[in-house]
Image (cartoon, rainbow, N blue to C red; front, side, top):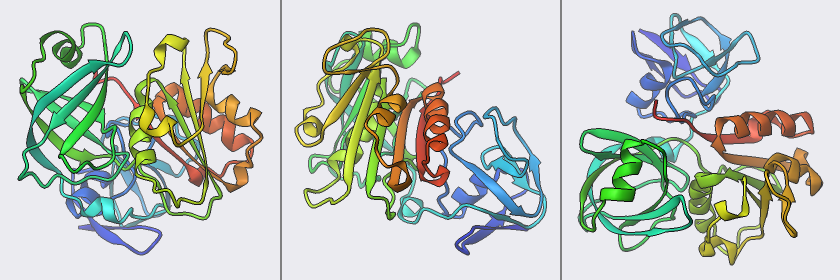
Amino acid sequence: MTIVTLSNGVHFDSIPKKTILESALDSGVAIEYSCKNGRCGACRAIVKQGDTHILYREEFKLKESNEILTCCREASTDIELSISDLGRIGLIPITISPARVDSTRMLNETVMELILRLPPSCDFDYVAGQYVNLIFDGKRRSYSIANAHRLDHKLEFHIKKVANGFMSNYFFYRCNQNDLLRIEGPLGTFSIRDDNSRNIVFLATGTGIAPIKSMLENLDESYEKNVYVFWGARYEKDFYEINSISNRFNIFYCTSREKLEGKFFGYVQNAVLELNINLDETTVYACGSSEMILSAQSTLTSEGLKLENFYADAFVSSG
């Protein structure tokens, strides 16, 4: 059995034929991840010592020769990685729980708000920013939780209408109140970190605002850092009301296909640069398409953002 050691001294056994990420999760150690299939890059790490073996194709483009995706490789010798464990997230058990449809409503022409109701006896826990798999008729699809903890055990999701999408078609055309689903989670490591940055920048495109809404709702009134929220869409009609955070935080809206008064024209990362935020004192949390995340990371790090202060949750297709 080989040993994986993290930069803060935490270590765990690497299980043969399992990825480093799977071995970490099996050991109750949380390290960065999101898609689990080598496409989003959230789980990348530098191998400081030792050798690894590829189990699955790394689709995300890595920049350094000793950089790996922990969801695609196993340790072939004892290894030391540049990453640290994430503490509390690793202590929350992943469970499968029943949930019933409490309500649905349209947020705009193509996005639905779905509220699911957990049983009163269900002890489902999560960290704001995480996602779950919704299970219906044997199919699993991943959706970010869009609300902070509620006393009524309800969870909010923002469902995008997808042409010929199995789960999308169910929610938009066949879903009824009190329908029974199952929830698997919590999953992912997208969450606010405790660091020394003076500024927090949130970047979202489309329904990528959902986990960011959850994280912002979780910030109490005494939060001292400067908070900037940039939400991007193609057209104005693609936005929708998010009163729980828009009443507390200044949201900068960015449209890429039409110019509108009072809104930035272009991409969210360029709007950040237009505001002249000191990126050397900033942590960025980005959620949306993988294209946006890759572009935002490249643009902002080239302008002074530390790479280790860029966290992302990429939405990748179920296919």
